Image (cartoon, rainbow, N blue to C red; front, side, top):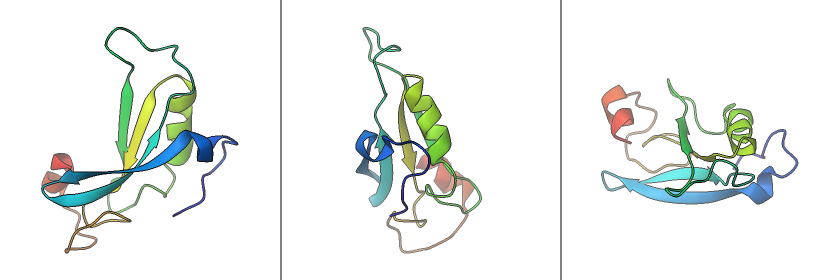
Length: 102
């Protein structure tokens, strides 16, 4: 796993999570909002991020996730099937239809 970038509290505020997409394990990081300023009766916003064109979650997305986190949103940053630390038998296949499904 890549080391957290920039934020001094990132390691404490980020947790490793997994979910399934079409039966394949997807690896993700959940950045919990820094505070509840955007929370309401229905919860709080969650920004979902994934890199495009073959990059992975550790390739420059952390600073953006930290900004959303500091603003009061949860953030889920994940690797598509077949990329990074996510599962998948076919590796490094840029498939925009499959990516949208993830």
